[in-house]
Length: 128
Ligand SMILES: [Zn+2]
Picture (cartoon, rainbow, N blue to C red):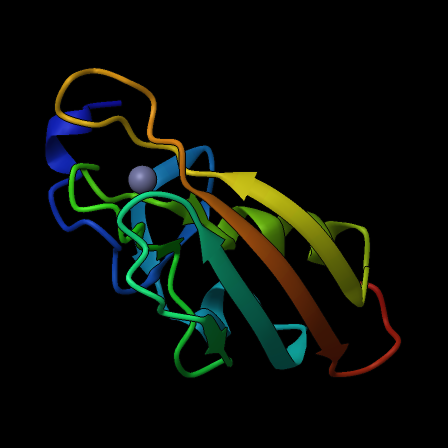
C-alpha cells in the first residue's frame, strides 16, 4: 500500500481486485462478464471548465475518472470500484453521486462532485 507508486494519475487499465491494487489488467480481463458499458459522468465544482458530460464505453473506460479542478491532485473517483460493485451484484444500472477522492494543494478536500450514470449488459445470464 504505497501511495507513492500511484503516480500514473488515472491508471490506464483496471486493477484486478482491491486486494491487489498493484496488478493492472485490461477491461476484458477485469470484467469478463460485461458485454457493453455506457457510462455518463457529469462533473460539478471548482475548476470545471464546462466539460459537460463525459461518456465512457468498454474501450474508453479507465480505473479512475480524472478531476478537472486544477488545484486538485487529480484522482477524481474510481469508476472501476463502481463497476466491480455492479458486477458482483449483477446490476445493470447505477445512478450515483461521487465525491472527488483527492485533496487540493492546501490540504483541503477537493469539493468537486461527479454524477455517474452507468448501464451495463452482461454476456449471458450465467453467474460468474
Ligand atoms: Zn478533485
